[in-house]
Image (cartoon, rainbow, N blue to C red; front, side, top):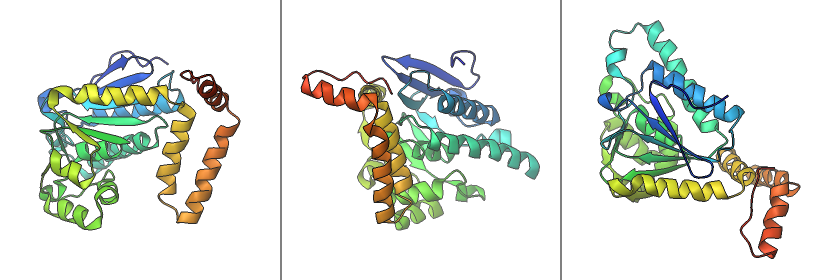
Length: 266
């Protein structure tokens, strides 16, 4: 089940050991998400969930240097019937949830503006690194709709309820520096340095124990939805799954032998 092949709306490129760069590739329309892109992203996330094929980390970015993703393709949506809109949105919903549930860590390299569904996609990733010139917005209220890909939930969890309400209800845009100050993005970079920064972090993650990364991602995501004592128990159960692994034994042995560990994901 090779990932290589012809993708109409995506570009895939491997880097080093275990890192896959996924680029949204519709630069002529701001990498807007049309039905085909939704289908291809859903297919890709499902394939990687079923078989990571040796990959250990993803970097999600956009082609071009001005727009990461402009959100849903409104030209395609113009004139859609309710049934057509609903069918398309079902594809989009499944794609976003598959991204959230992906066992591999995903670093968003937001190389330009991330509006609407573009910001919602970045919010589904584990880290967000942003170009210093990027701008963000959830402007759906100005179109007579509202965020429907987790935006109301993920933004409020990232920024707090009051800030999220202000941004979503006004639809106003905000800068990369504001996003950094508010804790929405992890780091900002000069535009020419963004991808290298994201790939460097991805390579660090790829060198670490993949089973540990998977359990950490699961513990943080699901534990954050539990009351604290239950979350503690959930964390311990996730931890216990790692005790009898070859990677745990390799990590301890490598420490005592004063060498870098060679994790295999077993």
